[in-house]
Length: 350
Image (cartoon, rainbow, N blue to C red; front, side):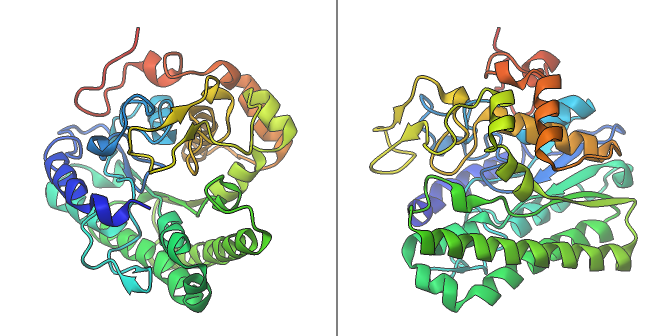
């Protein structure tokens, strides 16, 4: 993992972005505000990337889920998500904490947002998404799986508690509409060693974490009575994308191997990239391709709009077919067509 090697660059990048990418526009129109890690990052960690392999700083080969959601909702996107982040920088990693690490965690992102928006107009109309937890599990896994077993409860509680701390902070600041992700099913990702015991361990911890997040969100909602606050069961949706019926509708032909490979790290120049990345479920060892992001973004938009969205395979296949996701590329998608500018330097591809 690149965590310890990249924290200095990450800090400089986030500091600069705090005044540009991440500053909420002065407008009464509601915004779609995102806190998260590499699954949601739209370029905040741009300096760390091999640009030949990754699209405009995204950890994939096209727009990410929240860009699709913002385009569908016709809302400006305010994105603080930062690749490599954990739920907090007191999270347990490799037997210690990351208190000395400077990659902005979910809670750091929330604090930065609130600092930049002390006089927000109509915050109760904005929609906020919280997405975190994967790195709390994957960072220690890469060093010592035994650590996960010995500290399972602390890791699980830490993810859920940090999420609720962030939610409470923004609620107290006047925000009332929330979409809260659970942790996606990383146990199937190519990065996880193909060893049953390890994959079972990761699946078990993610499942328990998601139960804790769901219970904690229920308690938060009962206490605070937000206008809109729902759990997004991304874990189940991502698992279903590997089902033959759904993958066929998405024109995904490879659900197990990564398109992007490297022997020395995903920010290094020795990356090899396949010729059919759009047909891979996983673009690299842990991140889904843009077609997967597309369907996840559509589901998020329908949840926010109040639609009755179901997780079953048939519904997902129908959703993919209805929205022609099977032909989506970095140059041909609803985000490009909408002309939405999410970050400085974002160029519409013609």
